[in-house]
Picture 1 (cartoon, rainbow, N blue to C red):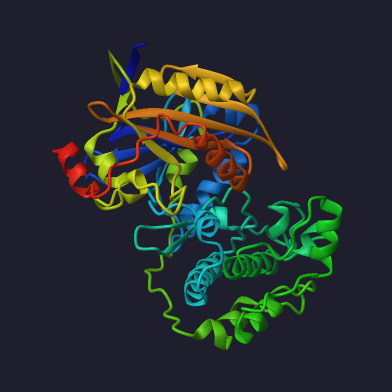
Picture 2 (picture 1 turned 120 degrees about the vertical axis):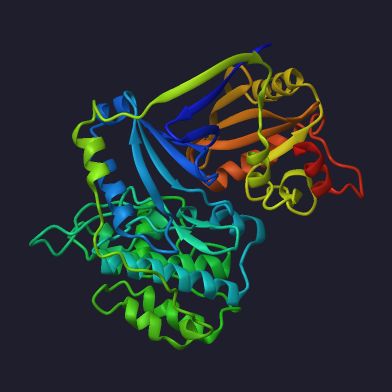
Length: 447
């Protein structure tokens, strides 16, 4: 089975593998050939934007990300367009989702929770000062960089204030994190709603579970409206006091950002982030892309050649390996799933794909395979349907990395599926012998 391998260039960017996939967009790894900087490239088809009437929403999301530049917010570098697609060039954040860390570790140490919460509040405060309300704050939208610093992402549901309008009316966000006033559909203050979501996040970090959780929405909404929750015994008095002040169902008496910053628990080891304020934000490139959606395009170039699975280049491998530490890639010890879900195999690529298809077939899943990339659909979960994409990459002769990622559905359900699915693939998953130095192996492979 041969594969057409495509080396793609988009202007000054060399485009690599897909690292994320959603309903309307894909996110690809890319490298700026002029600077060597790695970036995340969000790709959206113009036809999709027009078909679903998303021009204003996408334009708003991009404009907001340019307005709210901050060390604890994912940076937007630039926006490009080809004849058929929009390309949003973002900071490449390598540490994964904060949600994954909670899934793997459960509750986090209080000091670590405090540091993440301080960074979250700094980022949210900056947004509010710029008149931006996120409206979908949750651990899945909080990323971690290589140094463990928090980065707020996904401003797709964010709102900007309208002149003469004090309250927002759109009901949006993830139910477990949504403020009670948002559910009442009578208008709400975006800042107070974001603060509530931050309180839920702090609770989840410290407890390892949600303060409000029910399988049916009416019961869930009832608990949120009455703030029906209880803090576990291991919460310190200071943390409990702050959470109780945040999870106040009355937005008028709920603690505000400045009150949070003055709270004794919050102030412990608090070092406000220093960053350069940008007074003037230029949105000309955003207007150029969206106001002339059929024009203003960057050159695309592809080089094709026939071979097997896509070869992962050295730069991608170094970035993937977190500074030459391959534990997340090769070691399968205490944690079954690391920051991203992938495994390594020494079996031939054809055997890997056929085994994946056989296991998926036995699970009665819909299978769509093209070359060395397989999409699995029809995975039923308690919260609906889940879809997964599996792709095989060659990292060295006779050594393949199998990248598994969620295409749609809930992240927690995806992690459960990955664990059970990989248990059925044990015959193709390679486990290194004891004493193998993964870092030396990587240096050998990329030299």
